Image (cartoon, rainbow, N blue to C red; front, side):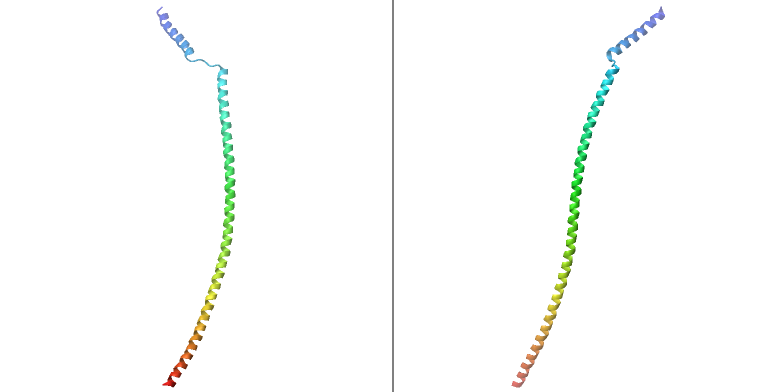
Length: 138
């Protein structure tokens, strides 16, 4: 009987634990678990679709912006090339103008020196005449 008394508390403890587990944690059926899993999958799918939509919109905006940037880059390159051609033409005109100006200055100086030399000779001649007339009067 003593052996039986030792077994009784063990069996009661096992029964209480089993019943307590049932009431504390409801057991889900297989279908309930699959339904919850399917709901999660659907929520994730909707979130992924929205993310994909957002990514496509962003991609479209980026492609549009890159196209505009490429067009602006081409316009800038065309403008730079036109400015470089104008610079070459302007440098050629400047070189030609400087050459003409130097030629004109050189010719003007030559004319000035020639005319100055004639004027000096003419003045020397007049001075000699005046000097000669002054010696005659004295």
